[in-house]
Every structure is written in C-alpha cells, then in structure tokens.
Length: 322
Image 1 (spheres, helix red, strand yellow):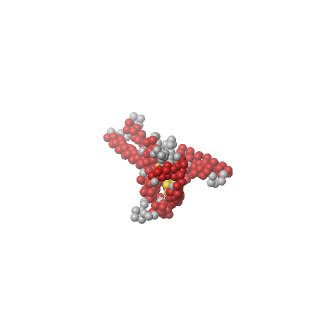
Image 2 (image 1 turned 90 degrees about the vertical axis):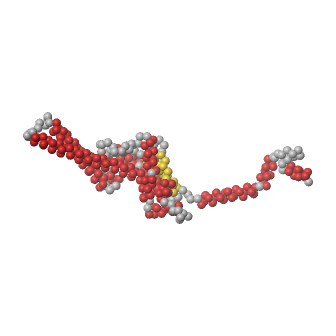
Image 3 (image 1 turned 90 degrees about the horizontal axis):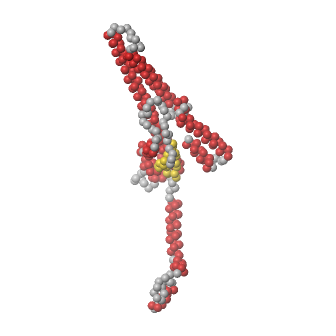
C-alpha cells in the first residue's frame, strides 16, 4: 500500500523514488484544469458584483466655470485708494482663492438656490437620511472645488452634482457671487472716498468761516477799511482755501452725478456699460473689442459648421464667459 501511494504522487509530479519533490508545467496545467470551476465561479461573482455596483452607483457630473482677476481696479476718484486691490504676486492670488472658498460666499450662493432648484439640489442626498437631513451649506462646501489655473490670473470653480443642470448652475453661482462681492467692495470703497471728501469740504468751509471772522475782527480793531491783497498773507490764505473748497465741491458734485446715473440704471450691466465714465475704462473697452471679435468668429463658424460641433461649443462658451 505504501509503495502504491508513492507511485500515485509521483505520477502528479510530487516526488520520485529518492524523495525529491518537483513539478512540471503539465502538472500545473493538470491542477488548473481540476480547479477551473472554482476559478470560473469566483470570476463570475466578482464580475457580477462589479456590474451591480456600476449600475446602481449614482452618476456624478462635474461643471466648471472660470473667472479672471484684474490687476488694477477702475479709477473712480483721483484720490488715494482706501484698500489696495492690485494682484502683485502669489500671496494676492491666494487671497482671492480664499475669498472664493470662504463661508460668506457659500452663504451667498445658498441664498441663490431656491424653489425647484433647491429641491433638485437636495433630492439625491435626502434618500434614507430623514434623521440627519443635509443642508445646502454643507453640500456646497463639499461639492465645490477651487482650481487656480497655472501661470495665469484665472480661477476655475468646479462643482459636482448628480444633476448636470444643477452642477452647471452651482459653478456659475459661485463665479457670479464672487464678481458681485468684488463689485460691492469697490462700491463701498468709492462711497468711503466720497464721504471723506464731504468731511474735508466741511472742514475747509469751517476754516474759511473762522478766518473770515478773524479778518473782520482784525479790521475792526485797527479801524481798517481794506487790506492790500498782495501783501496780506491772511487774504492769500483765504483765497487758496476758497479755491480748494470750490475744487472739492465741483469734484463732489461730479461724483454725485455719476452715482445717481448708476442708481438710475438699476443694476443693468448693459446700460451701465454705456455710461461715458464706464465706457472709457480700458478694461471695458478691451472686453467690448474682444466680444466683437468673438461674434465675428461665431458668425464665420456658423457658416461652416452645424450648431453642436466641438468648435462651435467652445466658441460659444468663450463668448459667454467674455
């Protein structure tokens, strides 16, 4: 019986007469053939699991919107800036990135998502979470990603959502609120400069009145009817102050006229861009020229291609962003 056992194992390559173990390629093929059904079952189980997971997994769409940072702010008043907003280096660029990532901007975007958009935004995340409902603020912060474009002053805002329309709206909302934030900041700085001019004008007026009273008292004490303007230092000072008051008042009136013109437009950017002091800004003029050039390019592409080729989509996207 022992001799027969050694002969059997030897035929499968497990040993020979002298006890040395070795296997050939044929032995491995024989073992594989004997266990082929185990391999097939494991493969089918893994494949089925992968298919079930792929079919049942929620498809996530990612939308991206870009915004360009300007190096200089438009000059509203010929005075020193209240806050320096120029982009000079990596620190300034990172500051703008942090503003886009801030909780304040997330709150502004959350206020924009209302009605049907809010229901569609929350619907994919509310199933099975009745005890722990999700909030728009948490989802906006989680699904949003800020990606600065390398070697440029362009920031890309990427937003993920199971609904492609909501993903696109989310990315656009972040960019629009960031632009509105910058506009509000510039407007607040301009209003601060106007208030400062008003205070300076009032101070100069008080000084003029005080000097006028002192001059009158001096005349009364010395029984003088008039003074020589060329030799009277007080009169020269009064004239200089009077001219300063006149200049400041004129500039203040000009700013008030511009401010009323902006208010009368009611936030319509198309009408605001037609105002002379806005249209003369170099950034606005450059963007208008770029839009005109892209409209010409779109017209040429529409004559050569259908509405949905990649070139048309890319050109239309570029025109919309501009």
